[in-house]
Length: 137
Image (tube, rainbow, N blue to C red; front, side, top):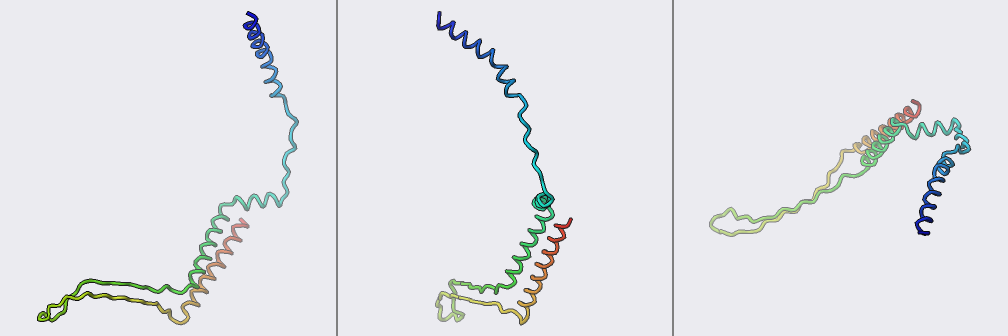
């Protein structure tokens, strides 16, 4: 009987203190001072979240990739082919195995590499100008 009375007392005590603890949690806290921003902070945030600037950065990276590929030499090509063949003279009647190996290296016209590098550099410069324009808008 004493155990039931003790459990009932603890339950009543916890229920009686429940609104007090909720009211205590809902009491107004001292207001934290609002964050202060300087003009430089605001400009940095605007540049960080500007979608036009992110797009122009992507275009700049693309143009720099084109510049890198414009300075690369073309890759050589190696091919192999094989198979059974026959001799054209039917009186011989010999069957042979034919194999072909081909290695080729494309040669560029003089001045082509320099012209493509200059065009790629102009693309990079235009992308940088686009990025600067995006920063201003």
